[in-house]
Length: 114
Image (cartoon, rainbow, N blue to C red; front, side, top):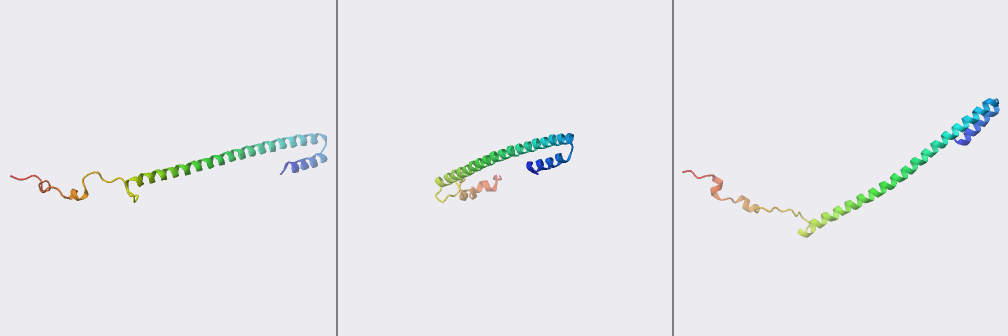
């Protein structure tokens, strides 16, 4: 119900009742009007908060996109200087794979028997 509808209903009731009842309807109408006003103010407050949260979400989304873009750029910079094909840069630093399989004959058989 709107405030106007409530006013019309209260007016109709007050015209049908006696003087004492009309005074009660007037106070009831005032109470209803105050309650409606409080609810309207609360709705407006929630709408302001919602707008603020939407603005925060937009800013966070923008910052996240910038961070992701930055990380992608950093990853490309790391891959590019060491190999032109963009391959892995963490090559093994130990002996070559071919040399790993070639161990001296003595070390493969274990200690010599006497």
